[in-house]
Image 1: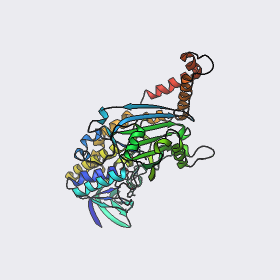
Image 2: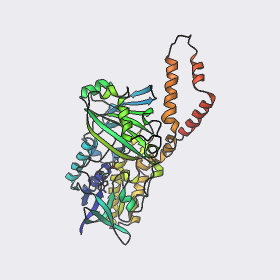
Image 3: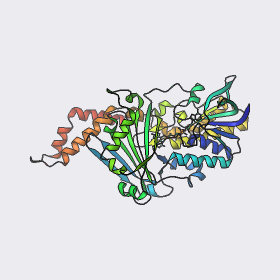
Image 4: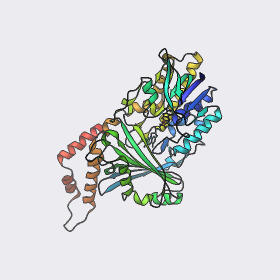
Length: 428
Ligand SMILES: Cc1cc2nc3c(=O)[nH]c(=O)nc-3n(C[C@H](O)[C@H](O)[C@H](O)COP(=O)(O)OP(=O)(O)OC[C@H]3O[C@@H](n4cnc5c(N)ncnc54)[C@H](O)[C@@H]3O)c2cc1C
């Protein structure tokens, strides 16, 4: 049986970061990826927060093929026939290195794989890992393409529904309550058109999140990110909610209808759809975390549950990079001791506990419970739209005081419900 020091399963950001960090320490590492090339099967909305990465492969990010620095944060509440948009712009977000950048995974992951290969990592694509090899209860390699490959350590970076973590007994099959499915189109447009339509200064970029009627009251929301010469447009809906409703609506229909909304149609008019993708995303946050180590195995990135949606920010990519690098550090320590047991590899857990990855996931552990509220996805966007409609309208009759209109639209029982929801929000 051919044997390597480390086998990484999955060439996403977690797997490639682990491979890069290991290869630069002279560790023999092979990455096995089922896609045609790194990035081919990877989906993100599209924004990477780069500041948390300053301590993780810092030399790399200066030359990474990012799309646009995000200087404009836009949030839009959508009801059936109205919408309210809040826009925040910051010069500080534009100053290099910018706070966050839009990215295209086909470009970013391929570039990172080349960097890892330059350091000495081996990459095998179009090859699916089907199983873990075990000996005396320890993981000693993988079964890929019918071939047995041995390793001192396997690092599972195989994404949100990690088969490897499941095979190792670290996670059980996911519940539809804890996962959402995301659909995304990349729509090409000239850079100048994007800048004009989104009101952007030069190379600056925007990130826009949508909440409300676009998901038909279901848990989820929409997103739009500006790349150099394309827009990433998509939406996310929780799987449990997709399976409810009569009649059932096909998930991609939500995206088709979203594209026809007056808030979106003019932005994408004349654009060419060059990519369509769908992917799972964990919405469980801290409560969805698994033990990320076993005898001969580490788990990083989405595979370990490291993703976090707190409404205003959606994060997963920088967790993937950081956890990949920390997994590499844990392997390095285990290698020095020549001990790849679970006890030795548990140093990974300590490294994670001390990092922003677990600290942020813990800080925002109440976010999933706060977001698990149907009123956020239909009632509040509708109520806000109706209230603003009344405040802005000057009709035939003499206009009443704003306070009277507000009292009419927001009853005492409604105000009480709002207070209860705000109280939950204060935990986030
Ligand atoms: C719609 C959507 C929007 C998102 N928006 C954002 C955002 O704006 N910002 C953000 O930071 N995060 C966002 N995320 C989350 C982010 O994309 C993930 O956290 C990130 O991609 C995780 O990287 P990863 O390397 O852990 O996993 P992945 O990128 O999923 O990589 C896993 C890799 O493993 C490979 N693989 C799987 N199984 C096998 C196997 N058996 N054998 C070989 N290879 C295998 C896959 O092909 C894939 O290449 C979003 C996710 C979705 C779905």
